[in-house]
Image 1 (cartoon, protein in one colour):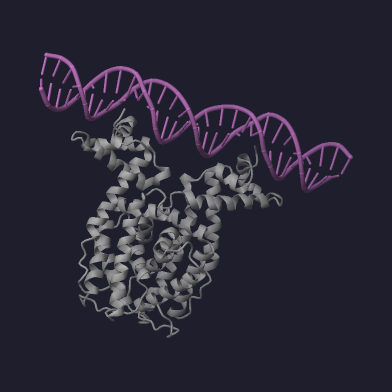
Image 2 (cartoon, helix red, strand yellow):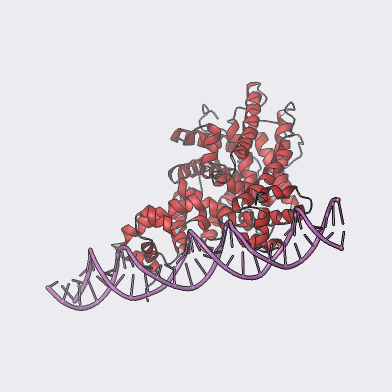
Length: 218
Length: 218
DNA sequence: TCAGTATCTGACTATTTGATCAGCTTTTTG
DNA sequence: CAAAAAGCTGATCAAATAGTCAGATACTGA
C-alpha cells in the first residue's frame, strides 16, 4: 500500500471517473441522507462496479466529505463577494436573490447542506462548520451597523437572517411539500423569481426600506 | 398468528410498556432519522429486550408511524382551535406564539416532523400528509380574504406562512446550529419568547399591521 | 516494444440489522 | 385455583452492507 484513495484525485485520468462517482453520490446523499445512502446505489447510478467507488474513496465518510466540500465551495464563491460598503437595500436584495438562485441551480447541493445542518453538523468537518458560521456573523454585524445608523428599523439581525435562510432553504428542502401545496410537479424558474421578489419585499417591509422597483408586486 | 402487534395497544397492561418504547423511539428517530434509527437502540433506551419492541410494533415502519401519529395529533390539537372570525392581528399572533410554544415544548416531535417534511414525506402515510396540507390551505384562504378586504398589505399567503413555518421550524431543527451562533448550550424559555416577539413584529410589518403592544421591541 | 504504473473489477469477508419463533413468566378470568 | 390469555425474552436466521484483496486490464513513457 502507501497511497490512500483520497490522494488519487490528482491523477489526470482518474478525474473523470471520480467526478462521475461524485455526482452520483451527490444524488444519493440528497435522496437518502448520510445513513440511508448506499454505496451500492452510488455505484449503480454512476454505472461502475462497487469496488470502483472504494478505489477513489476510502470509505463512505470520505465520499460524503468530498461531496460536502464541493457544496461549501459553491456557497463560498457565490455568497462571499457581496460588497460590504453598498447600501442596505442593495446588499439584502443581492443576498436574497443569490441565495434563491443557488437553491434553483443546485437543489441537490442545497438539500444536502440543509440535511447536514438539520442533523446538527454530525458528519461535517470542523472547519467547514466554522466557515458557515463566519458568513452569518459577518452579515449580522453589518445589519447591526445599519440599525445603529438608522438606515433600517430595529430588528434582531439573526432573526432576520433566519427569515431569509429558513424560507429559501424551506423551498429547496421541501420541494415535494411545496409542489403538493401548489399542485405542481416542479417549481419553475418563474416560481423562484416570484419567491425572490416576495422575499425581497417582505424583508424590505421588515426593515422599513422602500422598494427599489416601486411597481413590484408581492 | 391471528392478532397483529398494532392491535395490542387496546389492552390495558401493555400500554405502559408501549408508551415507554414509543418515547424511546421518538428520541431515536429524532436523533438519527428513519434510516439511521436502530431498533436495538430503541430497546436499549427503553430498557427492554429488542424482541419486546417487535412484540408491540410489527416492524420499523409501524413504529415510525406510531411516533408520527402522536406528533400530528399534537399539532392538530394545538393549532386547530384558532378562531377564524377574529381579526388578522389576533389570528396571526396566536398562530405564531402557538407554533413557537410547540417547538419549545416538543422539540423532538417537531424535529421528526421536520425531517419527514424534508424527506418529501417518504415515510408518512397518505392521510397524515393530507391533514398537514389542509391546515395550510385553510390559513392561506383566510389571509387572502384579509387582503381582499384591505385588512393587510398584499402578500403571497403561502410565502407568509412559509416565513412563519420555516423560521420557527428552523429554530427547532437546528438547535445545535442556533446555539453555536449564540454561543449557548441550550435555548432558554426567554430565547423562545424573544423569537416569538421578533416573529410577530416581523410578520406585522410585512402585513402593515400595528403592533398590539406598542412598547414591544424586536 | 515492453516494463511499470494506474485503473478497474469479481469474488469474498466480517459485521450489522430487522425480524422470527418457540417457549417461559405473569396476569386475568371463569 | 386452574386454565387461558397476555406479556415477555433468549436464541437464532436471512438479508444486506461496508469494506478488502488478488489479480486482470488499460495506459504511459522510455
